[in-house]
Each structure stands twice: as structure tokens, then as C-alpha cells.
Image 1 (spheres, rainbow, N blue to C red):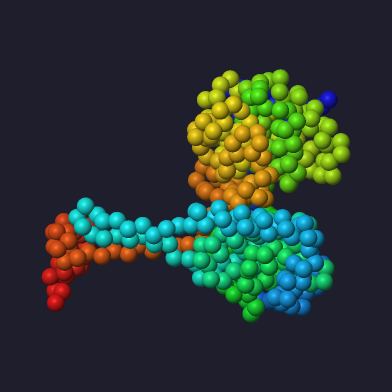
Image 2: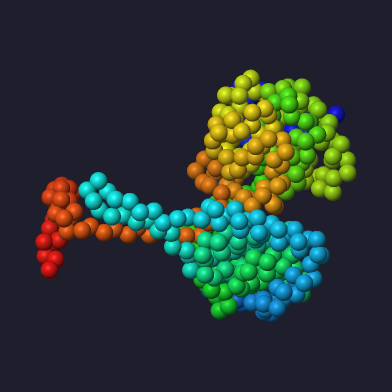
Length: 433
């Protein structure tokens, strides 16, 4: 049996090249690619809806006359959905809603030592743009993961852009999910052009202050380019999984978890980290059995051969150090005392505690959000939540007696920074009638 994983061996003896493969997962796009994305976006900024129609025809071979999708098309897609699939999507939406209601940001009030009253309140964004893939792959679950928390956070208007398929409309699964989530408007437009349309506005598509939702490399680069003027969600690339296992873990279970995340994309990064070297060949044997009949076997094999890893560690401390450095989107703890280990894991998008806590449950039905940082971005980014759909406003009140106590030192600091008008304003409280 040939080795499936690109990188095998002990963590302590990894070569510099192997470390680069594992670490450099968020590759910088080539300058030519960035330029092409910028050109597509400028085309939409300049020509609006006409540019979106032109790009749909030239890039996807789809002719679309109407950019705006009528509301009745959403209901028709929902009514045409298989009953069991509709039930599962509705269940997912309800779970997401319940969990994110518990995470809803709350107003905080406090008082400084000198007596100033400070309030920090979450103000929902007025409008949010949601991107929903619908070309080669349609992910209604991802639309729910953006739309439902946004609505829970209190966003007033939800706008969806999704590529047009044959017939000029977005994928029916996307339209059905939009109906379940209660979005306000859906538009037929995809790729970098759709991101530009939401960022800059067109005749049909309103300008939004925030864009969320996964997409391909074109969408991700477009979001990166507008990030200076429009708020975006977490940096999201190909799926990632790090499994921390010991000899209590079932090899068949580990193989299924690795295959599940590897089948997303040929560039997915899945790594098995184990204290038991004998586990690796057993997992590979299970993977070979799965791949013999897996519809996406070629994608899984390519993923494992590009960025897959099967590594051994000498201790839990070494495993946790590697996990912190790797900063995976998903971390599955298939080991003893998993809850205690979870408390020590840092730099992870989402942690799954115990062998029964399959990552795919988090992908669909636990209610936690599956829009998570990838490419090592978990070192500084969090997953999407209701926090992503509010902006925080600080309210300050300084009563006259507190102002009197603050005035002298405020003026002192202002003069030290050569700002005399600031120093003068510090005494303005005396002018209050």
C-alpha cells in the first residue's frame, strides 16, 4: 500500500520544507490573478448590472436578463424541495438561531474610578450582503450560517448574491435556504463581480457595509480587495482539520473524519497527530477502503497528497504546541480526557471534544457557526457569530463634579502633546449654565 499522506514522521524531526507545506496554507495569489480580479470589479463599478450580465455570459456561459430574483421564486424553490431535505434545513436553521441567540452581544455599562459613566452598546448593521456559492457547488448550509445569525443580531436587511445557473436563476437549493432564513432580496450574480456589486452598488443591487459568505478564489480575492472600505467576515479558504488522537481512537472513525474534510477541495489540509505510531498505517488502510467506493475519491487523494499529514508526537504538550502553531479551522480531540485537553487548545476555529463529536455535525446541525478562519488565520481571527453583524458604539457621560475632577490632569496631558485647544476644552465644563 502506497502512502496517502504527503508528510509523515515525528513532529520533532520535521524538515523545514515540510513545515512550510503545513504552515503556508494561505498562499498569496499571483499578481496577474489579483489584477484580473481588480479588472472584473472595476467593470462592475463602472457598468453596474450590464457588467454582471456580461461576466455571467463570458465566464459561466449563462444568460441572465433579470438581476433581481422575484420573491415568489424563493417560495417556489422551497415548495419544490424534497420534504426530508426541507425538514433538515429547517432544523439546521432553528439550531443556528437558538445557539446564536445565546451568543447575542449585550450592552455593558460601567463607571470609571473617577465617576464617568461609560456604556458600550451593540448596534445592528442596517444591511448585510451575503454571498452564496451556486456554480459547481451549492452550499445552502453556508447561507444559513450567515443569514440566521445576522437576523438574530438585528440586521434590518439581508441581501444575497448567488451565481445564475441555467435558466438565469441561482441554484434552487440556495433559493430555498434564502426562503427558510427569511432574507429580504436575492440577486443573480456571482464571482468577483458580485462582491463588487455589493461593495459599490449597481442599479439593482444596493451597496452594503458588510459582506459575508464563502466562495472560490475569485470571491475571496475580491473580498480581500474591498476590505478597506467594506467589512468582511473571516479569511476563509480550503477546509482544514487537525485530529489529536491517542490509542483510544478508532482508526475507522479517524479515516472518515479525514476523508470528510478532504473531500471539500483538492487544497484542503487534513492532519492526523497521534501519540501512537502504529495508528497511522491502520488509518491509511481504512482510507484506502473508503476511497475504493468514494464518489469524490480523486479529490480526497489529491488533498492528502498535497497537504495531508500523519505525524507522531512524544507527549501531549508537544501535540498542543503543534496545534497552536498549525492553527487549524477544525480541531477534533479523539483522545482520553478530551474535555480537559480542549481547555488547553489555543488558536483553533472550532474544537470538537471526543470521538462522537464529529466535525460534520458542526458543519450542519449543532447550531455553532461553520464559517471559520483558515490558513492559520485562527491565530488572530474568530469564527462568524452575531458579533460579526453589529458595530459597537461607546456612550460617555461626565457629570459636572466628575468633569471638575478630570479637568486639571486632562489639560496637563493635552499641553504635553502640544494641543492647547484640548487643554482649553478641559475647562469648558465651568461654562455650563
